[in-house]
Length: 220
Length: 307
Image (cartoon, rainbow over all chains, first blue to last red; front, side):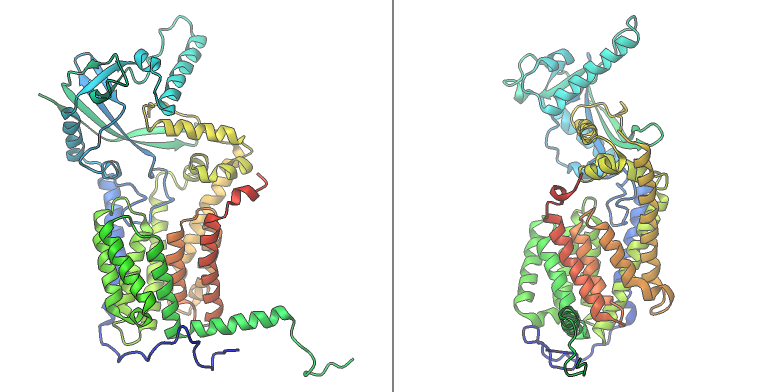
């Protein structure tokens, strides 16, 4: 059996090492760790100054906070003379969605708002949305949740006005008109873009959300 | 009864153990250890590249060449070229790639620079120690600075909102699994048209809160221990325990949160810097962990759990 004193095993047998090189220790040992330190310090700064997602950016902040991938949401609202409508199917923007929500800034959000305004939209009321057949499971569950909230509120106080539903109006691309008849062409006077993060409140044992960044752009 | 040395044989398991150690001792010798570290790193690069075409072309091409022509493993140009492609790809995606991609990039740079030194393996040992120690130090700093870590909110919320931990949360917290799954669906709905400001209930319990508290402080303790052990002056005090501490971290973390890329780069760095005392044993344990993490990630563990 091979031991420490016997020749190396065949498959990993290597030729002798080349002649020694002379490079300073600060380069060969410390450069890579120094880069780690620099990048991590930059990441820590960006988390606190630019709302960078703590799990990303090379700061080794994963598993340190619930502000993580999946906890941040994008909401785009069309502002019309009749009110606001939530964009239910955001288009493909010329900016990575991940860039937008992992480190949002006003310029990016403004750009998204202007891109949104270039599309044609159809606005549907909540009642029209609830009557649609081809909704996603998630939208269907939100409708059920609205109904449940209103029922609970009504049972608590039958004389109170019904709770507002969320969203009051929804916008779909006009290209989907053949699938979703009945929508009204939107006269977009502005677009509001929000990035939210959803965290956890252990005292109340419920979610707690806050806006990370938002912008509103008027469309002439 | 005849008990002379000629007739007393070691048990079969002892003989097998010594054989394994002897083979590992060969691998743990400096230049052989370098090859092992190089191959572990190349496998990591081949199996877990970021999905950017020019990064893949460069990394795949160079890694395959080095595996087929082993002398390339000792070429600084190979590792510096790999670093170039990694930097080119990761620089574009820095805001969404995982942190271990950064660590892999630093590691490839450290390997390339070590090949420029008079004593490559000795140089790489130092770099590996500093990279591991600093990565864990910043992980500790991030947790201390986090607004929801020390309160236990992070782990409690994580256990209830990450589908990987649903069964654990149900079992430990005494919470019906369907309650956790329902809450998880509600959170997924937010991605569509749900109201983020409307509070969603989390089906937590006192037991789960206590478990989250234990996880919070255990994780902080073990990561701080790794950071200190690897940054301590070598072969003194805490540094003598660094391999054990790192392996404890890996064994207690990655079966639950299988971030294979991170486990593999830690294992490769672990082999590179393994303590000179009992280096064969530590090398073997790092390689075993390297294998086990990959296998566990694909074994449907949930089927075998009692909960």
